[in-house]
Length: 153
Image (cartoon, rainbow, N blue to C red; front, side, top):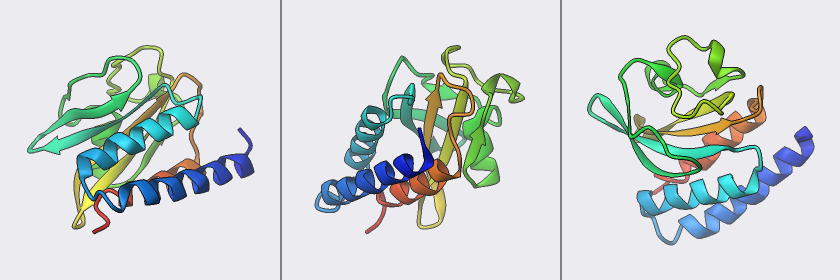
């Protein structure tokens, strides 16, 4: 997908999500809506969903795509890398990522965006693609902006 097309699509998605999420102000509903919209607007998104950070565990929340790992082992994988480094992680080839947790071997690239509430990470948005090198800074910037809608009030 060309960068201009991708950016335009994210702008439209953000505008749509703003209208849907603002009147509800329910994190679970917001995450479900974000997941559904992103997963259906980007054909290369193979798995799209959230993992909640509960004490020392990442537990699956709402998602779309094939079955997910219900709980992610601490300190392993891309999701934990995002939590531990407290930043968005883009992995062009998950098969080369040390400690990658393969919930589905068909995934080839991944982006994970921390979700913050009062500056504390409470969840991550995890998106996998069957395509290698599917994610870039346009995805990172826009997904970070989108996840801020969850706890905007």
